[in-house]
Length: 409
Image 1 (cartoon, rainbow, N blue to C red):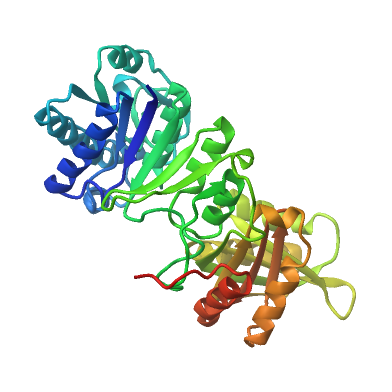
Image 2 (cartoon, rainbow, N blue to C red):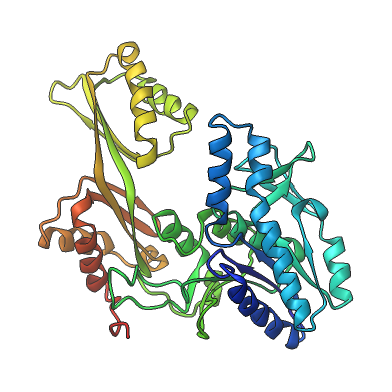
């Protein structure tokens, strides 16, 4: 007997027929003798509809009431799935986050899970019952409903798996695993059988959409084995696991890209201590996340140009912050470019194999693609390029690192 947490996203539970299909997948694990807890998202499109209602009622809404509204989609899905399981003769019961509870901090719409009281679920396991839980939500210190933000149901599932000491957490979605890159751009992209937590975390943070960064980080922290599977086809998925479980590592495991980047250059910044701290501290205070950073000394030797990347949605806010600082710090101007993209090559094999960056730079050069900014980590090399060359760069790099497989179909 194994203890399994299954998570089904919005497309997997988009309508009644799909919820019935999910119930069959849950039944398969139950019939195998496993203890099963299920985390569900809202039906596809429902959360966006609820967000729309809240914003229509009040643009400057109360965050606590906003969470009360947008968390209701998962309540509907959990009840419907419990009914579908009961129709199959399975003992099942739905649960909301406050009933267990999933304890979170008080940051509404972006809450973090601090603990889960699993005693009730374990007791129900002993009675042969399947627990169907509403994802994306928790209970704050003031006993108000909180929501976990983007990818919240994935985070709920991984946190529950960790709290239950589950053997595995299965994430069901509309793709059948993690690929070497987006198959829509590169038809020869291959599904990865096993990938390390670190590689998946880098791919997710650099633009891969299969798993949210926060849930992967949580899985790595608690050593929760994650499996990415399709709700719609019977096929092996991708296992996200510790590096020790993978016999032979490829130098590069995947190519990620993010078109949601903007480049900002602050020109002729006085070259004195404290200026960079003022710029990046002010951006942090405005909740603007800065990624790649490059600093160049200008010709006069007394000033520098600072170039960095941020999310495209943060560009207007960042420009406002920097304009307020211009007179105080004495820099000349701020230039912004939203027409850029970040492309990254990722692989734990880089630790022991030189030449990865060389291959990347030569490949892009051969295609006439100019590199604007470079950033590296132990298992990743990222470059910023003009957005119009994104697909060309991804295809060329995928081939250069030997990742191409047979064309899909």
